Image (cartoon, rainbow, N blue to C red):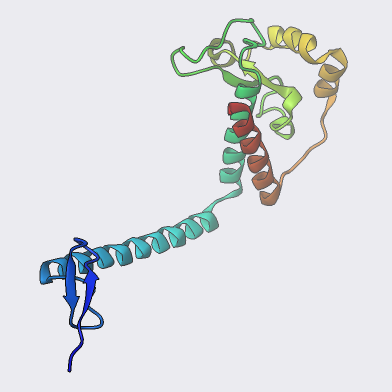
Length: 189
């Protein structure tokens, strides 16, 4: 003798008599809906696994230059957030969010090209308006005056005379990126 139990359908939640132990649906239509939902879940998991594998592959293909760019982006964002509200270090103009192209740049006193070892030095990088940084080539004379006011003459002289080469490893660059991304999130909150 076949015993039947009253169950709720997993799709439409209607009550039905369960005649087979594996059936959790009330009708073939609900059964097909449930099958498609399960199939979609399996496909979604497969896509997530594929994306993760692709991310690992892309990570392996990154060069040291890619890590430098990522660390520089995080560092520049931190500097812009740190100095927001202070104005341009060279001319003192406001570097507002409403200006074309966003807020100001993270301008380096000693450029990244002439002193790459100072690219992640917080004393060497400050908020600068786009005009001074891009169109006046950093406006270095006025930058120095503003820098002396902010960090003092001793720190400026230490920056100017710092010639010690530093070559960051990939692991150090990952740490720099993580550090400044965390500091930027903290300032943004």
